[in-house]
Image 1 (cartoon, rainbow, N blue to C red):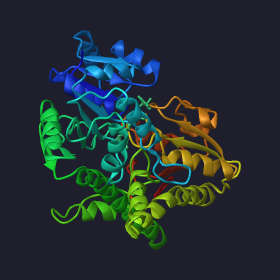
Image 2: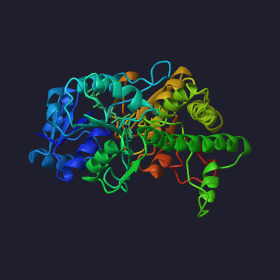
Image 3: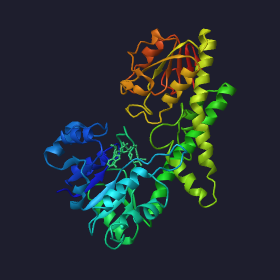
Length: 419
Ligand SMILES: NC(=O)c1ccc[n+]([C@@H]2O[C@H](COP(=O)([O-])OP(=O)(O)OC[C@H]3O[C@@H](n4cnc5c(N)ncnc54)[C@H](O)[C@@H]3O)[C@@H](O)[C@H]2O)c1
């Protein structure tokens, strides 16, 4: 019997399970994909932040176990939901996965259990959407069982802050719900901060993501202006970052990627419309960031034109790095994918190299060996730490550096063109 169940063994669920288990709590991961369940029960981790060696020790001790069977939920003290919250085709919140799982939980809900939603979502989800479904069990939230929201703040690939050391905010439906959730997380995490409501906790997470999205959009807009003014945006960002107060460094790039930043802010703009309110910063940031792959395509085209007297049509372009950020394997919403599509539509012959991503089946592509000279140009889209960029510049005919990964001076430095 486990203490805690976590629904969804993904980028959030696995590190969370690992963190609780390392502190001696026994955790059951409830996961839909049987292959993932088998892998976890063999002690094999498919999430970069959790090393297989450490996971298998915890599996051997019986502290981590995975299952596809929701019936086991009857036995646990707390159920944490770490499931995807995507956008629908109309770019509206799609809570089907979370609400489907909530129905499965409701069918097995026991008196005294604590349910916490960790998935990023709009303010009101826990109270307006989860509570009624859970109460179909015949039990009442805040009386018979406890309900709270506590956003996950994991940043895959980051080593200085972990699930254990990153402060966790918690907002329960009632004071007792908050107290129970704080008690649970405090058994494994260093700092837990109670808030007054689930809505405050839901909006906290969105503020964090929107803050990043808006600031990235700001430097992306300035990068486009710098292109016209003949200035080097990276020099300007580096210089501004020398100010010890009142400035926070954000970097331009080929666009937003990952499961969070391109998606989550729109959960709030959707909810805001219910209050006759338009979240203009979110929309504007979305527009600027979504335009970056288009801007980068034209930069590649210009570089081929002026640098090599070639047109994009028919040119061989090597995309270096396709995951959404450095040193991870996740390609969800990666701007590299959009760029591949745009370059192909323009008639370019696109190949890619990424040590973390062996295949891109949706494009019929596999990672090719890194041989820059075999291509008309190399576009550095995601700058993994393991690549020798001096070597890439040495070997390539032309480099378009969208991440300031090369040691080049100025926007155009010999065969290097920078964003
Ligand atoms: N990935 C991040 O960096 C990150 C950071 C903070 C917050 N979040 C939020 O956390 C939530 C989860 O994201 P994630 O990146 O871990 O997702 P993920 O896709 O990596 O993992 C979700 C897992 O849930 C499983 N699953 C789907 N439906 C299921 C069901 N009905 N029952 C059991 N398992 C099911 C999937 O097979 C998958 O293994 C999202 O709301 C996301 O926005 C993610």
